[in-house]
Length: 122
Image (cartoon, rainbow, N blue to C red):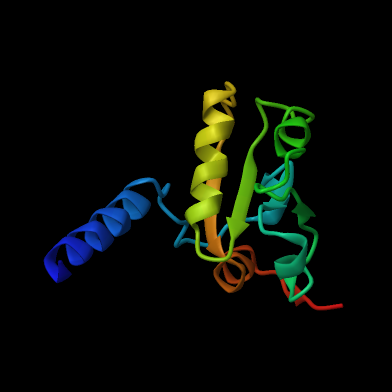
């Protein structure tokens, strides 16, 4: 039974890693993006967000409507808590036909560092 639980956990971990778009590890100019998109929940947003970011909660039923308001040819920088949901959002945007550059900024702190911006806490 322990072996089955271990294998199930390993498969879940592999699936999660496989679904991630590669997180950015190089410096990025925030001006190069039409928007910086935070796909976390409002509760996570309240703990701090990248200065200038917009909240597009991927768990919200309105997420698809929000994404559809964006220019699909523009470039976007997307981040979340770990990079997983950002990767899912980027995959979804690609399915919708987004052709611009879509960067996975990973977690909040990584995204802020990559963009050279601060983390805002209200």
